[in-house]
Each structure stands twice: as structure tokens, then as C-alpha cells.
Image (cartoon, rainbow, N blue to C red; front, side, top):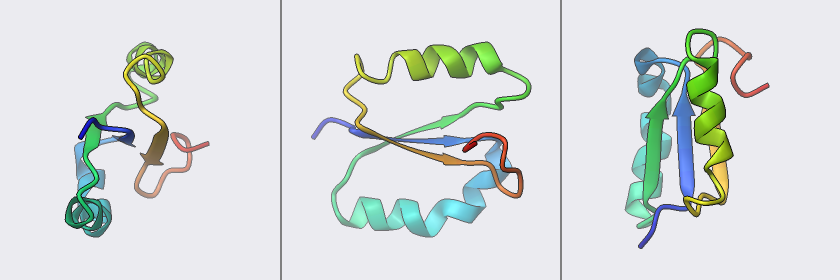
Length: 73
């Protein structure tokens, strides 16, 4: 099954906050593409990834930024 969901984290430390959600998606057989991209440190990389979402077949993005609201905003 091709990945249709992308989870974007602001930093590696954010991963601990979403482990339960990732496990649930895995249990449901839903493949997820996980990216760690700091919107503050690498805005151009984030832009490039976002511009290629449709081409890559990604239909849903879940953006997580720990205690910061900048990425999902």
C-alpha cells in the first residue's frame, strides 16, 4: 500500500509525543511517511517537500511541533 499520509515533525524530540498515534496508524495498516523538518531552520526544505506532496500521492498531512504552534500554523 502506498503512503498517503505524511507526518511532519519540527524536531526529533517531537516523536515521543506522537508515538501512540503512529502505532495506531500502523495497527490499522496505514503506511505513513515521516519527515523531520524544522520550519525555522530549514524553511526551503519544508517548502520543497510540501510542493511535492501531490506528486508523491500524499493526501493528508499531520504536522506536529511539540510545544510550538509555528509548524502546524
